[in-house]
View (cartoon, rainbow, N blue to C red):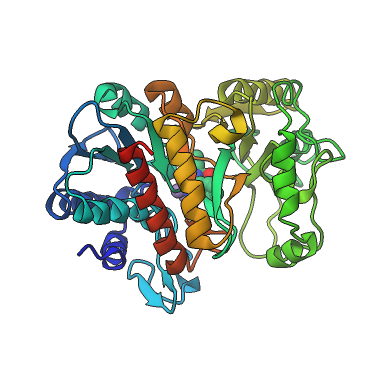
Length: 456
Ligand code: BES
Ligand code: MN
Ligand code: MN
């Protein structure tokens, strides 16, 4: 019998931090773990595809080409665990406490991907002759922008073409409130660096003669929003499509209290921009954020200098139908046009991805008598059964940039079953997975796979 809890614990023990060049051991460990699990425990055909970055694991249950084919996506890489001192338990020794498991990656995305692995394992234990092809594609670079996955998909296009993509890498509302994610925001990111004098200068000797790069940078950054909080880049909102009425209604129905949310975040006031309320703006609206800013003296006490340089990391979250390349171009153009005098500017463009929207067939009106249509129907029914209420169909604010490429390259739409919860501490200390939700979702996934196989 497949034991998914033990499997997540073993998976978590491999510190597969994709951003850390020292973590090759953890990456290889996670890849080896997946290979053994897929091959030895489940009898799938496994390929470990090397890339210039971290490998991609492709595991396949083949069969009659006439059978439906479900492609399952997940990522084995995790965010760095620091700050370590804020963890109550060691991040890479997953620990079960009551109905929760703690550890880096248990919610993003090792636990959620295990939902579908467990579902197929149990289904095959029950029905070894199941008329269904399933291919898992588990990558190791999601947290650093999936830079090599598109090339792997193009190279393996034939074996990855299928009926739809099944995945879990988004967040739900709570233990009794399951949701199917209908959209994710896209992302455009860059770093801007301003150089003033060749080296730091005495601010008394030279102050008054030169432009201070920190002053130039903050003026530049401040110009990127207007007084109301809208993004102040010409053309930024041009392609934004308003959400459909039912999407707003679905959000309103949740009846969430902004005051509770304010307290949860510990801010003196919530500051949504105009046009949307605070909950809507997190998924229906685009943003521009400063992820980090630096320049000048950061040590103890004071130091009277004019710093030589200053820099900022900026990223935008995008909504349909904004295009991540176009937005990056607009941002870069705006920064260059507004570059204050007396400094030189250097811009480094980072990876990005387009926004993603996938409406379930009963909302979009498309033909439901397909493998994808049956999957959404089975998901809806199984969620009602397992969670005791109908699923919420909601967009989310985060990004899985590769999804738009998966649609473009492989032609697959995603059914996104949320497994992690809002308070799961994804990317933060004390990341956790709710094991009740895990178990329910695994049963839902099993039902989806079985319904697709049986064509019902
Ligand atoms: N699983 C998250 C994305 C996510 C989080 C979607 C919460 C919905 C709700 C994913 O692993 C992630 O962290 N994505 C990054 C992408 C970035 C590194 C390009 C993100 O959203 O910041
Ligand atoms: Mn993730
Ligand atoms: Mn993540």
